[in-house]
Length: 118
Length: 112
Image (cartoon, rainbow over all chains, first blue to last red; front, side, top):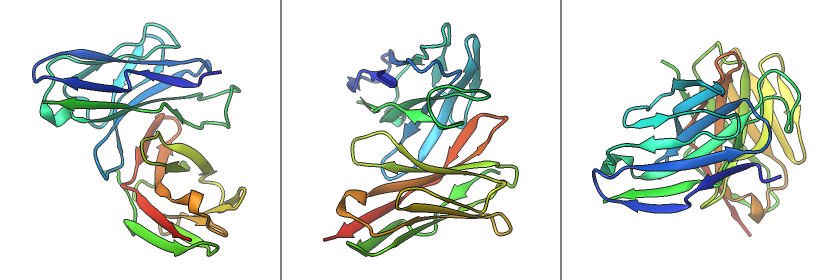
């Protein structure tokens, strides 16, 4: 099993461009998350989803959009890239409320996507 | 508001010594806590977790202690090894809300 897979690994965007970070998990997890991590800082929650068709804002949602049309996929969209969105983005997933791969409510992270906006 | 913070941003220890990384949290409704290890260029890796109805939980070379009275969490690493060098984050979760809130992180440096 691949776990949580993110693409692309690295990307450079110009100000005002748009792009989508892809995230997929094969663990049948119902919860999925997007975090951003600025240098030397902890992770900040952007958006999360408790199941297909349901999304909610996290701590820093401005400038981003998400969708959850399937259990497996949770893409993150940047519509008008700004330098403040230069960061490392992590997708994660977990299972809340039953048995699945992993221990209880453990949240599993992808390897990260490095985004630079210039 | 909700916040999780770490007392020490950096910690340097000698190989073979024990390490203790501390964390304070402010949301008394949090019922689940996790420690993550993050190596350079990688995503956070689960180390150990503890629920709020427990005071202590042990894993392989790691122990997490939870003191709900003072809202304090600690991670103890026994016989620290060079491979333990990384940034360690504590995170708190309110299980019904499904949101994991991270602290700033502590960088652990192990000297050979």
